[in-house]
Image (cartoon, rainbow, N blue to C red):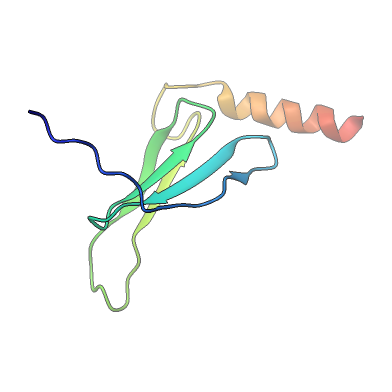
Length: 89
């Protein structure tokens, strides 16, 4: 029988970003953390996951659009034009 997925013991309220996307963070009993983000696709553009645990922090950055991938090559421009149009109204 396959291992059952762990049930999160903490799920934060979603954070709504200015463009309407939502981010949710969940924590699991094994110490893992899960980030759920609306508005796919994303590419991982930055990850700092090791070092001196007393001084350093884990940092993850995911980005839509041009940052290292063609996953969504026009997404950054779409967000920019959407923001410009909202500011005109």
